[in-house]
Image (tube, rainbow, N blue to C red):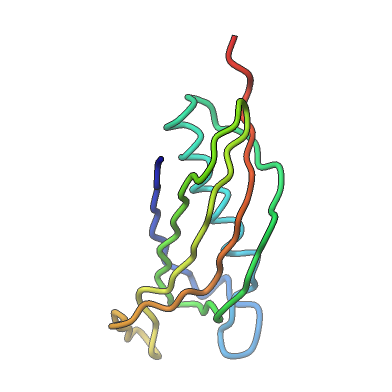
Length: 121
């Protein structure tokens, strides 16, 4: 069907917990952004997020990370689109201003969600 990918640096201002951890909602917000682009590309409308049917927090996201967030449409209804999401850490801060590209990206969050778009006349 269609896959859309965004990359985003996680600023230190978003760290909420010890060890510069970022809350899980950060990735969910990025899923909303990438879903919006999916709807625009498919339907010419930003659409609305209706629900998540599954969310799995698999690994921590930290300030200083670079995330690759992917949305893949797996089903299209008349007005709904079911989308599989993945948030993957591709770079990680190592202290101060140092960072590294990860040889093996880390899958941090996965989800399945549904968006809806207006009916076409």
